[in-house]
Image 1 (cartoon, rainbow, N blue to C red):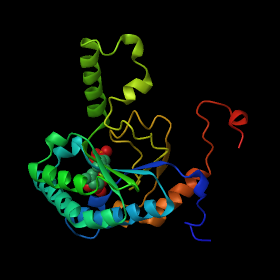
Image 2 (image 1 turned 90 degrees about the vertical axis):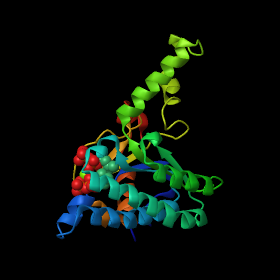
Image 3 (image 1 turned 60 degrees about the vertical axis):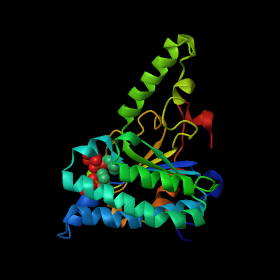
Amino acid sequence: MTIKEQIDRDRLPRHVAIIMDGNGRWALSQGNQRIFGHEHGVEAVRSVVEGAGEVGIGYLTLYAFSTENWLRPREEVDALMNLLVQAINDETASLKKNRVKLLTIGDFDSLPPVVREKLAWSLEELRDCDGLRLIIALSYSARWEITRAARLLADDVRRGAVCDADIVPQLFDKYLTTKDIPDPELLIRTSGEFRISNFLLWQIAYSELYFTPVLWPDFRKENLFEAIVDYQQRERRFGKTSQQVGT
Ligand code: IPE
Ligand code: IPE
Ligand code: MG
């Protein structure tokens, strides 16, 4: 039985989020520049998007560039931004063919105009797609998002649209960039690092975490399927006892 056949289609995670890590190490281990790893990371993205569509995942979020990644050397940041423009340009037609709808989360305003324009074009092209929701986290960090939400909420309290007693988790959700997107049931991080790096801190409160040593440029849909099969073997208790959730 292939790994794909081992997936129980009735118990799929609705939303899978991935911290795509290890591009630099992948390239350096072969004596290449870090950007070479980023370039090959695009192939991994293509495979994973395809795989998510094949098994029927509803939402796939990819952490592509963090708020902290702006601190990298200028040449690497520039190369990443160029690569992003190129990838959006090259992939949009096939995303459309596969009915993939693109969404972005992050500080859009901090991106260079050329990236914003290309993204706006792609978002518009894919606006009516009704298949997989592909969410790209760009210039994103959870602390940026949560403090922004607090500010927006404070505005609404000040103008009387919200009162203190209204502030419950479900309301706070509405102020996040992920509003209307279900929380991820499964979070994957590649490259053998065991940390979250400021990703979706609010939304992963009850996500199942899956860490793999595979470096992102080597990651393929089969690796995604392995993670899903692993996820399906877990018991999710949400604070209850095993007897209560009884499988
Ligand atoms: C992930 O790979 C891509 C981004 C963070 C943009 P890295 O560039 O972090 O690769 P490593 O972790 O240095 O190997
Ligand atoms: C996390 O990877 C951010 C993205 C994958 C976009 P990093 O490589 O930036 O994370 P740290 O700095 O090692 O924690
Ligand atoms: Mg890294």
